[in-house]
Every structure is written in structure tokens, then in C-alpha cells.
Amino acid sequence: MKTKSIEHIFTPPAPHMVGDGFRVHNFIPGSYGLSMQRMSPFIMLDYNSKFYFPPTDKPRGVSVHPHRGFETVTIAYKGKVAHHDSAGNSGIIGEGDVQWMTAASGVLHKEYHEQEFSKAGGDFQMVQLWVNLPAKDKMSKPKYQEITKENIQKYALDNDAGTIEVISGAYQDTPGAASTFTPVHLQNAKLNTGGKAKFSFPAHYNTALLVVEGSIKVNDEKTVATDNFLLFKNEGEDFTLEALEQSVVLILSGEPILEPIAAHGPFVMNTREEIIQAFEDVNLGKFGYLE
Amino acid sequence: MLDNFKNYIQNHSDITDEQFLEISHYLKSKSIKKGEFVLRHGEVCGYSFFVSKGLLRSYTIDEQGKEHIIQFAPEDWIIVDRSSYFFNEPSELFIDAVEDTALVMLNEDFITHACNISTVYRAFNHKALHSHIRHLQKRVNLLLGATAEQRYLDFIKLYPELTLRLPQWMIASYLGLTPESLSRVRKELARRNFKPH
Image 1 (cartoon, rainbow over the protein chains, first blue to last red):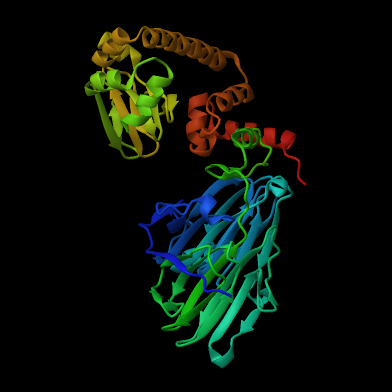
Image 2: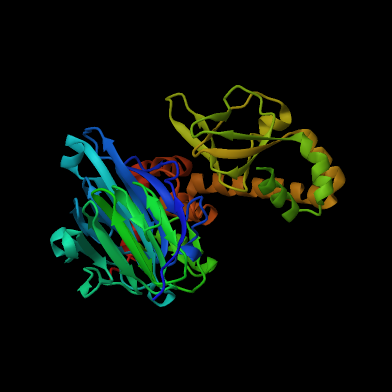
């Protein structure tokens, strides 16, 4: 097996607010040219780097908005988020939890800082990732996978190097907690200082990592600092990480979905007509209603 | 910023790149932040505003201090107080930005020269005026006699993507409804059309 070589390391772009509750660096599609096609099946990545939100009585967040044609994956590192949707679902995710929402044919939802967290204030750190769906599944039934940290299997690395928490896909023989429509590996590597981990994904999978905490050395070659995003070339399979301090690294690798993409705001479909249809459906209440 | 306007004008006329360059010095472009004004009540409206990116609205404020939204202008729309612009009267309208907006300002010289260069543009401009009158006539009729649902259905046909960009109260203001009535209309449509899986 060949080493997966590094294409580029991106520093976090200037943050912007999503609603008033998420202060995010947008890496995908963003201003770096990490287009939906290049990064498929990962079509959007917003990273709320660790940020202190002061106490408030009115929870901050994003008001009602629709999604159609893909999945939203929210990974909570610090803080708590509550969500509600037009089908009557609601839930709260906290540190270490993951919400995997298959918007598919369409939901209206809203996301807010959880009430108690809002009142107390505190550090907030999250990743929101959009994972595309293949055309045949875009109009499938919406569903949720509420994945609590207890349900995420951990692979213990040798030599007390740390653990790999497998959100989806697999690490060695440890399966991911989430089911996916196409092959998607999403893993949190929690490494102790000096700890090493090896990964192997097919060359054609689009593969990247985000350093959520600490700093690491990749392939004994490049140092990647906190909040930086590393993209691998589509060459080679294997790469190694070495933690230069206590580190948390989100690993992303997925098989590209080689289909046309028509995207507008909260809808990601295959054709322009499907986008127009999505607007019409949401306006006519076909996604339901949510205050 | 001018590129979007150039595309727009070339889509509706036979104005060439060279001709556009010639008349483009009559244009001004400007970026404004959400909440900033391009026209205030009492001022004379010297320009038509073409939206390259973002969203403008025109509105009046009544004696009770309530806003009544006349028009929204998202990308590729032109917004202007025509009565102030053509008759040189103080405007009754405010025009401000609902989102951060990049716009192109067209003065009368620009329109005159564009019409002189291109009869196709002249015809387009003439037709645009009549389309606008048709739209206003329809809007008056809806405000006088249509149900809340009919007004909302007409709105989403005209501005299909604005429902995701505007707060409910602005849509309600445009439709001459209270936010509560608009909310009832949307709930009722969802009740009829939403099919839970």
C-alpha cells in the first residue's frame, strides 16, 4: 500500500455567524476551492472553533429552515444543542454526541443552544457536516440517528496512544455507530502526547482531517495546528498521525458520489428543476410547518 | 458588481461589450450593509437600483409608525420610486437593505444613452414599465379583494425563494396581513399538503 500524500493544509477562514448561535469557519465549499465535487460526499463543512458564548435568557441559534437532498451531521465537542423539526421530532446533543439527520425528501427544523447551556454560558465547539445522498435516495424518508457518546465504539490504540471513536464506517474491525447510504468514514482520533495512529482508505475516496484540539504530525512530514484542515490527494491509501500534544482529530473519508450537483441554499439536488420544485414544495407546506 | 448588470442588460438587448463599456461610466456601484438606506422619505430618488447581490425593499411608514412593504428586490431586480425619479418629487418611500447588498445605480443619462444605442433595449425598457404597471394593478386587486391564502400563493409565485430569506413579519407586511394571519395560512397549507411518511 502506498502513502496517501498531502495536498494542502488550510488555516481556518474568517468566521461568520450562522443565525446568532454558530460562529463558524466554512471549509467546504468555502473560499479555498474545496468544492462539493472535489470533496464529495462531503458537500459542506462548518466548523465552530472553540468559542465562549456568554450567558443569555434567550437561546441563540438558527430559526426554522428546510433541508432536502442530503444529510446533516452535527458533532458536538463542547456545549449543547437542542433541535426541533416539522415531523415533531426533537432532541438534545451534548459533548461527545452526534446527530445524524437524513433530511432526504425534506424537513423543516431549527437548532438552538440548549436552554440550561444558554443560561450558564460556556465554551461551544461543533462541526456541522453535510453528507450528500445519491440520486436514488434523495427523496427517501427523513430519519434521525441520535448517537450518544456511549453508543460510539472506541478502538483502543496500542502503546496507550489513545482511542479512535468510530462515528461511521469502520476503524480496523470496530464498526461505526451510524448507518450511511454510501461509504462514509467519520472518526474522532483522540491521541495522547506522542501517540500514533495509522489509517487506510481507498485512494479514490476524498479524505481530509480537521484538528479540533492539539497539534499533530501527518505522515512524519507536516505539522498541523489546532483548527487547521488538511486535505489528502487522491493518491495512495495509508497515512499516519502523531500527536505532538493531547489532540482530537476529526477524520473524514468517503467514496465520491459521481452525479451532477445542483445546489441552492438549503437544497442539494441533481438538477435545477429539482431545486425549483424544492422551493415550491417548501412554500406550499409540503415540508410541514414549524413555528 | 457591474458584471451581473452587464449580463442582465445583455440578456435583454443587443448591447455589445464595447457599447456597454462606453455607457458604463454613467453607472455607479455601491455596497451597503443590512439596514442601510439608499432612499429616505422626503428625498428625491435620483437613481434606479439594480441588485447584483443581496436584497432591497421599498416601504412606507404610516402615521401609527407601521411599515407597509411595497416591493422586494432580490438579485437581478430593479427597484426605484418611479414617481420621485420621473417627476422629481420628494419620495414617499424608504428603500433599505434586508441583507448586505451590492447594487448598481442607474441614472437617467444611462437609460437615455442605452436607449439611443439599442432599440432592443428601448423596447425592453418600455415593456418593463408596462409589466410593472400590470404587476401593480394585480397587486391592488389582490389587496382589495383576495383572501389571505390567494395573496400568499401569488407571493410565492413571484418570489419563490424569498420565503427562506425574509422574516415572517416582512412577508406579512407586503401582503397586508398580520403575522398571525400569515402563520395561519402557512399552517393550513401544511395541513393540506404535508404527508408525513
